[in-house]
Image 1 (cartoon, rainbow over the protein chains, first blue to last red):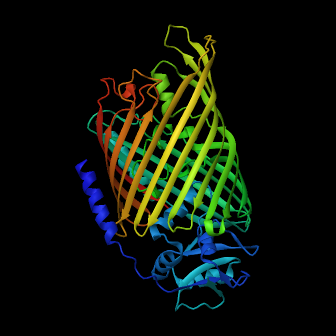
Image 2: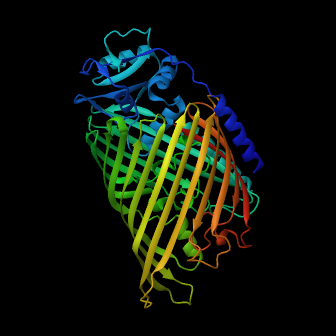
Image 3: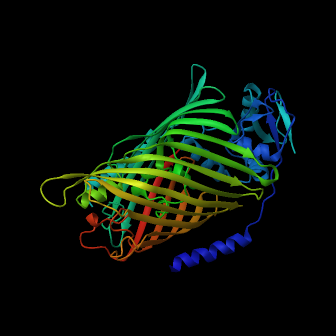
Length: 140
Length: 398
């Protein structure tokens, strides 16, 4: 039991010292078939947690980056989950039979390319990334 | 421990890494995903054999799964998952269809899912086998016992589900279901009854229930509740009183499971808690014993847990889990509880692989007549009151 108590003590100290890092600048991009020009923060969470698969009657699907500053910034600013927690969430949904895995890509350029050619796709990229061929959604 | 057993365990622990794969491909224009997962565990106790394994000498346990799913259209999805495990006397390499579903989502708030479906019950019922998504090497056994998992894991029937926005009050996810529970002849209940002279022939029934998950407007918080009404039917053979086997049947007249649970995550912290209660009332109907009073059985379990992501690769966790069965039904039982305090180190090796090292400090041995980790058949010398256990588990998943 001593080690349990020690862990709780360390855990409590760590909790107090936890600081929130500044979220990276990201922009939310969508295929041109997505009819809306803005999206609420709640709807954005719903899209990326796969509880929301339509916006204004049109089908939408999330596109996720595997890692990197845009991914970290997006999760911190909008989804409020760590990268590990989001990955576990997707795996849980998949392995429980509740959903398929979203498309996971390796870079901003891959995300833009995929979103541009995939009907209903919504992704995110770094603020300085090119958004050619996709539309940028304002997050309200 | 035999060298042969050790060699087999090492081979099995390496094989998933080679087999491990995720394939995405198109079939007739539809995207098909193939995923797999596996884990190899090792458990060592200072006294008392646990979960039907010879843990006092050190025991390996293995599981793996393979799933294939496809979004046929934006609204229609089909999928199947195969699962197998070898944990002491549980399953012993007899693969099963873990789930197989056809899912049609009319809208975000209304979908229908049919087939063999993972039952929405509590925080982790649907994902308790998925070692890769859990912090723990062993889930809190008070609520998610490895030896009784199949009793509530799935149902063959129909689910209605959806997600409803509640404006300022957050959102609500719901599942309503009904179906038949599978008859798992390789779980702990069969093992325990057979050891007591009552081999089961069938143990199944129907179940219907609901699960509600509320995400309030407080970031990181989720609260939920589940309720399942169950109809149970045991068909058993009594070989304990003489050379002539006697067939018997127990029917449940009342049986339900209720669960309340919550999760809160903030920054690198995650906290979880769940409380679950089971109540059963049985009548023996064959052979007719002239029974006028029902046989009552009830138990409850709960756990609280905390986990902290220390770094990108390291997560530390702890939980305290308690299980009680109704002492009034079994007044002669020496201990009617299991208390388990746990500390875990979870190390993520890479995107596919993780290692967990976990210490369990258990007090009590629970229900000696049922099955909840500690079995008389595995402990012929008698059960000791406390058990400490080391668990190491390597997992692969994508």
